[in-house]
Image 1 (cartoon, helix red, strand yellow):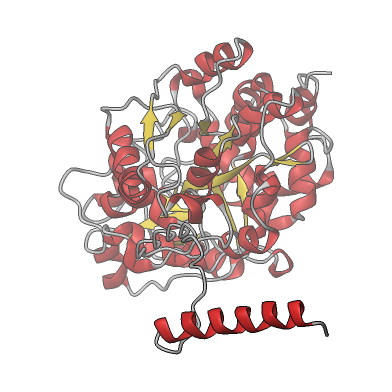
Image 2 (cartoon, rainbow, N blue to C red):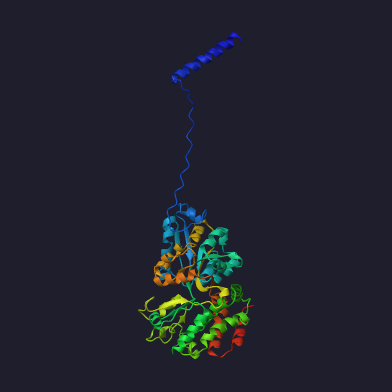
Length: 462
């Protein structure tokens, strides 16, 4: 190494030593600029309902969609009792997510929804009182399949498969069921019943034996009436649907409703003949067979409440209590039991009428509300105040504020399958037309069963 390079190296070493001494013997590094910190994700609030992992509702609960609005349309007005219950039911969702739910229901919903959808102004969600009404919108590709954003595991956890079957239209799971009314109920005068020592029948054979026991006691087992103005006959369609669920398969029930299994088939005729064993036995019906067509359905249970009762059983949905005499009390003046199964092979089916939530516009906040509708807390207005039952498997008896409906919910929890009122799903000219007309003629005795069934089949739209 030459002398000049050596001097340069010594100079550099000397400079480094001086700098090190100035820093207290510690080496320093040029500070790096501070990196911006990621904002912390706000925690989800504590909730009293299950949330689908990774779904839109989970994100909404963090406030992600705060300030957005979801529009819901339905068949009741905002200020009527059901409209108020709807607002009560979604209030918690609004509070927890900051998403506003704008309910714009009206009594002309079935007419106005068609106009809105055709005009490209569909609500985000529609509350259909009959799933079949949504079929035309599914066929037109207007409805969002809930399986596109809800997992199979979640839907199966929340619903009995029957509810999902009823919401599936043309291969699309077109919505989620929200609330319903149960029809498979038999009402009886509790005080007199207990005093007489009658027992609740759990099988069809036990029910038929009870019919005869009451008749042998000199009384009449059943209160039945099907008069309802222009809708006369509809209670007989309910009995037919009940027997279809109890004497043949769910697949046959669905085919019948779809027009693929004719009324003139052995399966349908067997169902009607099963309830005819009760209806056409004058010893079993108050006033006899001849009185059934002329007795208003709302008046028909009244003789149960006479002292002593003039009849002891009445089959009808839970709405019928509104026709019971003023002042009667559930659990004291009247009770109810499940209409027993006929063939054990078909389990314990339950006939229902209810509401399905259908989604038209796919946005995150709309998905969040649809997910909320899959938990029973979303029907809290009805569960706490009365008027309907939750369609969800996760609903528990303590959610019900009305003792009557808590008891019905316990019966529903034992059901093995559900099906919607069949006549409500059939084309109007059949379900609310020829079915009513000809089943009434059959009950009146002016048509035999074969003639009545062929007449109904002839009206099915081609």
